Length: 222
Image (cartoon, rainbow, N blue to C red; front, side, top):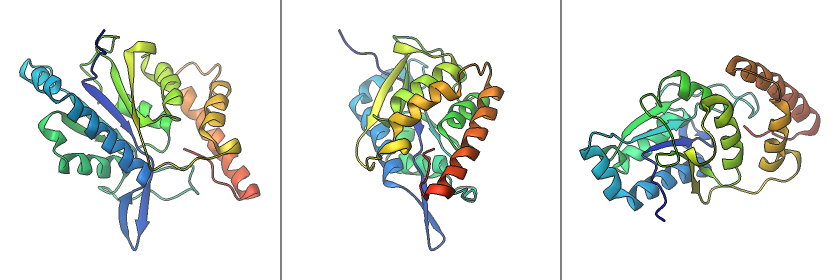
């Protein structure tokens, strides 16, 4: 049986570097853009047919800056994760196959999903097992995205398609690991019934993580 192809991809940022006043994507963010580029290349004919049938593919690059990372100030407009990822995708020619959009306000995975939804960047699309939403990130991050996407977007199971990125990620152990954060997320957000409640709870969690960071010298994940 042929696997479905995702005509809408949501690509999650993984950080921005600033060196001598110049902003660039981290290796993790660059790897996620490359995963989207490779996915479109592997399904080029399908994307072309869809566009010819009036079903315009769409790729959304979501990321502002990671608030959990040392309370960093936001990069200037045009230099946030979403902006830089979209620019790299355009350089690779993805605009020939899909609409490209950037969401640049987010500081966490939860905000990636909330702001993408609030900004209407998925409007006009209904996601099903035959027409899934492609989620682009590293393998370790995808289960947490799936959990949060269900809470925020109401998209579950086979209505999402994993598009895994490779490279650019160093393994993290202990309480900062993606597995630990994913398990904790299911407890942190238990009982939060709406988007506003989820965001309030996350802000309290980030504040607690920053306190822990100051005590331990460790940096919490976004």
